[in-house]
Image (tube, rainbow over all chains, first blue to last red):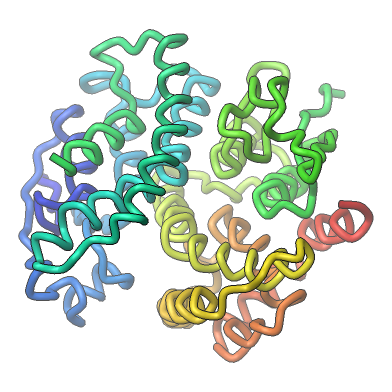
Length: 176
Length: 219
């Protein structure tokens, strides 16, 4: 059965899910949701994701939303397929989860604000708030200093891309 | 008896109280170690070794040192699956997925506006920091929209992830407690019938009452 991913490939949150499914070799179809037309706020979509956000998935009877919940589910379900994204022990899983939470709460908001102010708003013909972008940049530098320390201490092997790193990479790529 | 786990941080911190509620639900013995944030202890080099972002809580047991309250809660539930409230993080992958979905909804949709309101309305006055009415209004509106979604959900389901109290509901206790008990914005919750019912149930749990006791005893 093919997993249906509702959203657009432009969305970082959708990409987070796609990256995980690709890592795990899980077949999927992207069912396009037209964000520019506000499709995600229409009643038919709100039944699927009541906050009006993407992605949402449908996998047989399972319907799920929130990208980080989706990747946790598939990384656990297919633990034996492809690279080990979650770690091999309770303690390793906890450390992965810890950095996934760091991405969600310390990294994501800053990067999202930078992308919104520097890329998305200008593309829509609106001025970005450069002062806000600068503040976010300064805060992000401090977060990345911690990442720098962490990456020096923990050798990250290519075949062990954990969900937090996937999240961080795709969030960063969204800026480019 | 196992060595008590260590939780670093003040019980008044919303993130610390999230972990304490989970430990109490799971009947896991803990030692609460004070971190004096008004003296900047959370930014001291020794503390940064266990929480490099200089935030609370930090957590240690025999095997591991961890931070991020929701990661700590998941670890406690996985390690002590058979202790205390066994269903707190689900007993099968599908239930766990639903709990994770609502835990993420809490973290991504509920937490940002409610945290801003908790800071502006509960902490800023105590810290003699000027409140920002525009920020308060903006976040009240955001939180209101989130609670409209919760109102619908809680009309269909007793708790957020299903018919049993879970980590997803627990994660909402700290911020909601401040808004309902300490600020005058409690009606955001109590004016919504299903949300009000849900709040009454989850805040009435022994584990949360004990956390509130700890908060009232000392900061």
